[in-house]
Every structure is written in C-alpha cells, then in structure tokens.
Length: 313
Image (cartoon, rainbow, N blue to C red; front, side, top):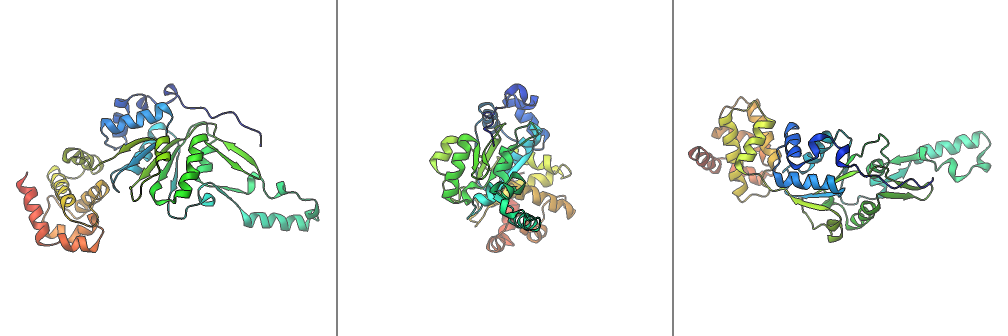
C-alpha cells in the first residue's frame, strides 16, 4: 500500500453554519433536542476548531454519549462508535482477519491446483480484513470526517489506552501484511468516561477536557420538556424536583438525566398528570436501578420527598 497524503483537517468554512460559533452550536444542538450550556458548547467548538479530541467526563446518564450522536447529526456525518470494556484489544477495536474466508480461499486454491504458487497476498489482502471501529474511522471514504465516539474509555485496560494514545497522535494504523492506513480526513473524536478509574494523564493531555455535571433544576426541566413535550408542566416540574431530591439521598446509584427523561415518558404512559405516592412506588424501577435503593425510597421516604416537592412549588 502506498503512503497516502497527510490527513486534512476540516476548516470552519467546511463545516455547517451551526458549528462555526459557540452560539451556533448551542442553537444547533437545541434543534437536535440536546440542551447544553455555553461552557459545554465552547468545549465542542474548540475541539472542532483546533482539531483536538474531546474528553467528556461525568456521571452516567448526564448526556455524554448523546452529545456525540447530536454532533454527528449536526455535522451531517457518520457516527462510528467504539464501546470500551475490560479486555478490549486490537482485534475488537481496530481489525482482525476473516479466518473462515481465508480458509475457504485456501481450499479454492487447492482445488484449482494453485496452492503451491500462492503467496501471502492471496489470503492477506484488504478483502479478507474485518474493519473494526478505529480502522473504519481512519478509512472513511465519503469525503466527510466522521465522528468517532470512544465510549467509556475508563472501562478499557490501561494497555489499550496506551495503544489508543498512539492512534490519536498520528491517526494511522499499520497492518503488517498490508501497510500503513492513514486518515485522509481526521476524525472528530469524542471520548467519554464515567470515571470508574482515572484516565492516564498522557491521554488527557492529548484531549480537550470537559466535566458534564448534573444540570440545574431549570435546565433539567427544559431538557424534560424538550424531550417529552407531551408532559404537562406541573408533572415535569414535580418529576425534576423529585429526581433532584433523590440525588441528595444516600443511594447506591443516583439517577441521571436519562432516567429523568425515561420516568417522564413512563408516567405519561401511565396517564399521570401529577405525581402521586402510589404511582411513585409503582414506577420507581424506571428511575432507580438497585433493589436496595427502591426499597429505601418506596413508601414513607418517597412520600416525604413528594411533600417537599409540592411544598416547594
């Protein structure tokens, strides 16, 4: 494989109008039903403008993954997602060989009497390569830089994190049997972390960084009314107020924004127009994911929280 030209970056003039300013990103994301503040929009704008990966940290369910999806939609490009997990390796993240197809090719060569004249190129060509997310992002051929989402990097092993650092430095991968694959268009990279462990400083230095916290009451109310527009205002306010009190409680896992949205949709499906103690008890499994948390809130504790929400207006 011949050495390709260095990767080209997408300039602001090549990007959609809505991504050429901080205010434009706020507006464009809102059009995609994603409500973000100026600090987050600034981080996204700078990542686009400077061509740097963006590392988003925060609790689960605060909208890190959703941001990458909305960004891809806003840019009008593909989203390529690599879900990280313990034991993730090159075969799952970058590429692996299609062994069944290679064996079939060898059988065909044997049947044709050509196996003695076969070379490595006969079974180690690009057509036998299974391209995983990282290689897909580097080999994007549609003329648009894709958004590469590396989701929950904190769940991957440190060895893979070190390998990823090399890719983010040069945006190229070497396949020994074929050659070096280098990105023609640098992918827009978004990494997320739930901070189950610290991401290595070397990787953090490669990225721009932003912490996504739980939203304020008003912002979360706006999010709920945007994502579940059928919800009555009174019900939406009570849901958000109740969830905020759950986050102050001593729970194994407090609910994120995703759970708030799910609960609003669930209560709406149950025909609720306002929170009632019985309906809270019956639907807590939508917003809480641990049995001990459900048992802790169900009953008297939930009723006290509801009374505080109603009293607070």
